[in-house]
Amino acid sequence: MATLSYLTTTHFDFGALSLVGKEMKRLNVRRPLVVTDAGVVGAGLLARLEEQLNGMEHQIYSSTPANPTEAAVLSALDQFSRSGCDGIICMGGGSPMDLGKAVALLAGNGGPLARFEPSSGGAKLIERICPIIAIPTTSGTGSEVSVGAVIILDDGRKATFASPKLIPAVAICDPDLTMSLPPQLTAATGMDAITHCIEAVLSPVVNPPAEGVGLDGLWRGWRNIESAVKDGRDKEARWQMMMASTEGAMAFVKGLGAVHALSHSAGRLPNLRLHHGTLNAVFLPAVLRFNRDSARDKYERLTTAMNLPQGADLADAVAERNAQLGLPAGLSAMGVAPSMMEDLVRFAELDLAGRTNPRQLTRGDFETLIVASM
Image (cartoon, rainbow, N blue to C red; front, top):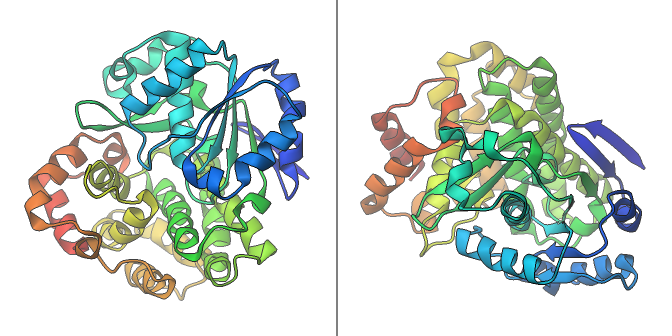
């Protein structure tokens, strides 16, 4: 069992779920709210967690939407408060983890959520966060070790909240929980992790240790994603993909870039409910072409990590990998129409992730990237 002490304490290996009771005792959590979703419940993973809780009193919130909303946060917060909960266990992919973080934020500091947005200095207002235990069941978001949470606010914006205080007190990464993940979701979440690693490396923020972690995560993810998709019972591939996911989030303390600004914007479209990792995979080739001349030295390092010949076109390599994994060829295949352009650009311009893109973005640039990704 590996215990990683980077940003937070992360227990990592098959069987790590057995440590949840020990960690609750260490954190003095006696009545947690378990934040999860219907997919986790249906897959029998919540039942496995409850076995480890060994009769301990707890509450369950399992109505997390695919893209968590402010309304869902308030619903879970009401359950947390009424039940006298003193901690949160997030179990699932990025959506339950982000929702759980937002509940912890409001439980300790009051609302509304919008006042904590980093763009207005809101991170300084965060004083107290109840203990969070994060248990990922996918290998993509890395939210179990990240500083952020992404929530669709009532005004329609998909807002990012970021603070070191939002990093869970402990992460329990058990690759066994991903073994039943279907191929399409394995592919989408895996490309999410790979995108995190790539955008973190390309961010101009100076943080060489985080950049090194991102390159290692990319090395693992790029080599193992096809095996994990082809055979979900491949334990080695599942271990490597979960590590790539965790490392991706460790790395993006440097920030992200245009891919995430665009994905956050498209992910807030209420009628489509688009998967974040799939959107990242679709936007990544166009953004790699756009950024190439702004970070050529880093592109060489990315090329090496991906085991590609020097001078290879990274955008082409990603597009080919997307096709091999059965991911959509473009936004139009996901239901995104040209008529949505103005709305997509408006919210992409506002997104925090775009601020750490290696090349400055204009409104016209966002339009060009969307057209290229159609």
